[in-house]
Image (cartoon, rainbow, N blue to C red; front, side, top):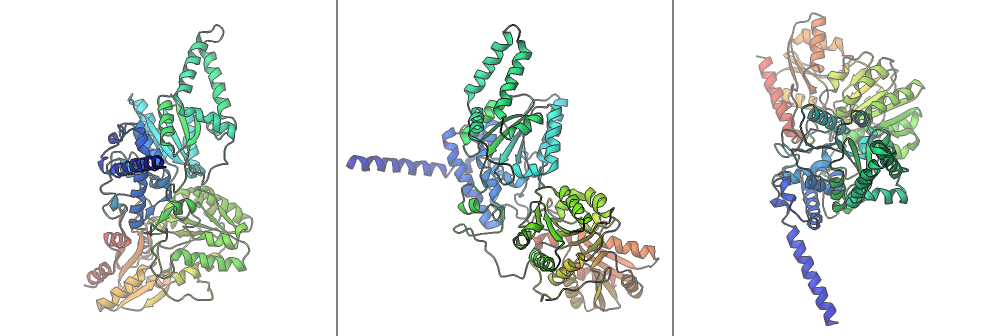
Length: 640
């Protein structure tokens, strides 16, 4: 008995010693070269430490959690086998790259993640030489990696190119365009499919799992190489015959697996393997490292790996605001209703009385608030995956058969479907509604997710109506109004909470192209759209001037009579918008004045002609001059 206890105590001491060792790995890693001398047996402790660091940081700063937790072992293995930045590792949708950032010299300032002047939440070529290609939108990595690989070939250079792609990205057409082109160009390229089974196909069978496991064993490749040598010297077979025989073996190995698709596209497929078995992933990468032509390695991972709450609810923990690590609950402040929820609630109410209304999202069910719509009307809800172009044209097909589709898409993602908005919807004047969430500045997600351009890129298109609410109550009336239109309609609204204004219980149809005068005045007029009008009213109050404030509501069509009358009356206009000042609402007002030969002094306040870096919404607005103080300054200048 004593002997058993002694052995148990020794094992316990050994475990404690191992634990104490693993808590000091990350702080000594200044570049990927520092992990190459680690014994493989120690890498699982490094993985645990990386997960702890990510969870601790995101609990304070907010950010993406599920994706990076699932990619820890993969990031370790890639940097263990390849030599970054000489070898080019391109991460698709950069939020899965947090482990990569921790392994490439950003451990000491990782606590600044998504904070102003801190570590970016996505890959950023200005931030690190190891961030080879910037990415905030999904499905770009394969195309970018192929371009890098082909440039290497043309320059006769020698390095490896690896694209890491999530399975969700394969719902986007761009990923398949890249795969198709890579298969035909035959450049040396490795695509690692990080499959957390959130979007891609069914579990593979036992036979295919057994056969694909061979990729992790070097003996298989040695035997295969020797077989090729032997077959090539046998009379009647030769080198060509040997290659054909081995190609047949590869076909058999991928039979019944997702690899058949990739083989048909011109890739050599290996996998699937356990993406959390770091030794298996390292062995697989070493074994295929020197293969010629396009190769695809399929690894299976678990989104949120290592944090139970994220494992159980991958959708919720995809992106998080600060939360309590002990229970996974967000630190929610008591705030007014969020604009996203106001939109969602209004759409559900309208859909109850209009059975033709259907809702569409592109892999952002929770982000757009349509998860609530799905619960009420599951048969009238469609999540098409990361495929904004398809979402828009799909909506056009529904509309042309008498349905009333509402496409809820973030402003930054709707950009990807610009051609479809023009040709498939507006050209045919189809009654599709675009609910544009996250319009304007979005804060910590930064320039890849800011939505400043939608007004400028939509208002030039014929047939479309564009609305912007000043608050959450006006938003619900715009939801209702848009569903009554016989042509395309877009309304945009910001991220975050409203003002807490009372919500009308009965919806009203807003007269198309008509704004409202919030305050009359003769010294000058502020003409604006969106939530900035509340700051405008405060600025006017503090200025002591007799300034009119007009809520235009519509960017297209403009309330021409009201705007022209204010211009003639005051001769001094200030336009305000949380959108790009170049080509935006202010530009539309100036065009209107020029068209009617009305002379007035005009100052436009909006997002300047630059990409606004990540930081809190307050900091971003200060950087752009979208503040009450800047409006007050503009009032003083224009009324001199």
